[in-house]
Amino acid sequence: MSTAAAAITAVAADHPTSATEAAGMPQLDFSTYPNQIFWLAIALIIIYLMLNRVALPRIGAVLAERKGTITNDIAAAEELKMKAQEAEKAYNQALADARSEAARIVAEAKAEIQADLDAATAEADAQIGEKATEAEARIGEIRASAVDSVTIVAKDTAKELVAALGGKADARSVTAAVTARLKG
Amino acid sequence: MAAEQQGSELAIHPMHQFLIKPLFGGDVVHWYTPTNQTLWMGIAILCVFLLLVVGSKGRAIIPSRAQSVAEVAYGFVYKMIEDIAGKEGLKFFPYVMTIFMFVVFSNTLGLLPIGFATTAHFAVTGTLAILVFVSVTAIGFARHGLGFLQLFWVTAAPLPLRPFLALIEVISYFVRPVSHSIRLGGNMMAGHAVIEVFAAFAAVALISPLSVLGITAMYALDLLAAFVQAYVFTILTVVYLKDALHPKH
Image (cartoon, rainbow over all chains, first blue to last red; front, side, top):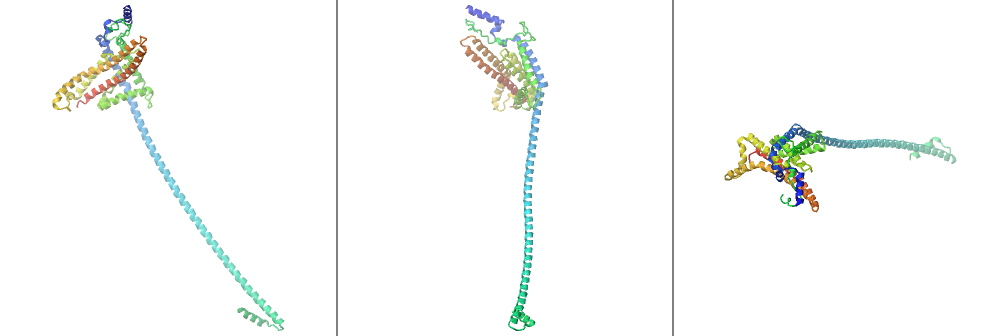
């Protein structure tokens, strides 16, 4: 029992409060109620003033500002997206234009080349024709001169033959005879 | 208490932690005496100041950590009021926020090893609950006059039942501050008292590991209860506010 007594005294020394308080609930000690309520009221008023005057308007403003910023940013992003789409469309348009332009230029060049080729061909044909007629003329000339030569040779041969046979060749009759024979 | 006085060396005084003592010596607690409770109320005020006033000082679009927490607390209570009581309820946002911040910090500060649980006192929770009860009733009558009494007339029920329901509704209405305050105060008190009991058993070497484990588990539970009870106290306040603003069933 002595240990128990010692323990109780030790406890009593640790907490120098009256036995009634220690046994019951301090929550039900009504003598402290006015004190608690008084300080609670002051605490609540201080917190309320802090919140109502400073903290809540400030946080509310920050939240509203952030909301506004986010909305603006989203709108700006939307706008930029539209711009990008427009740019892409313009780019595609330019590309298509360039393609058709290139095709047109190719066709034009082809036509030009064809025209040049046609002209060159025509010119070459003309030159060939010219050359051919020239050559024909020369062939005719040569043929004519050949006939002349044959006449001369025939006359000469006829004269020599007549002379060899002992006759006296009459130049005019020989020529007439050769001419007659040449005429066929 | 009788058991411990019979020879065991265990000195279990789970309620000692709730004793209200004058802060600067003396034995008498006058209505104006600063007590240990006053000190912890002051610390709670300081915490609210640090979190909501100093924390939001930067007014940053991209918030700092403290500002994020302040914004979460703001948004939490704001949305609660908006969802339950509607846009009209937002007029009372600063009051509800005051209650929430005070209760949540008092609850959590009480869990510090040297802390004092302000909200484990029925004088505190009772005052808060009566404050809510009186202001909500006043708001109800100011807004709707005698129409506020529709709150007790359940039009959804069959007519013969309504008088009985009205009686029950009236009784439940007046029990509100009691349940409102005892729920919070009782939770806080019980949690701290149980930790204290476990702590007392830690003095016995044989069971001390179990006791430490018990303290740890109870502490986790109490931490949860501290936030949940602050939430419950606030949401009930808002629900009562809703009844005052929209008494029609």
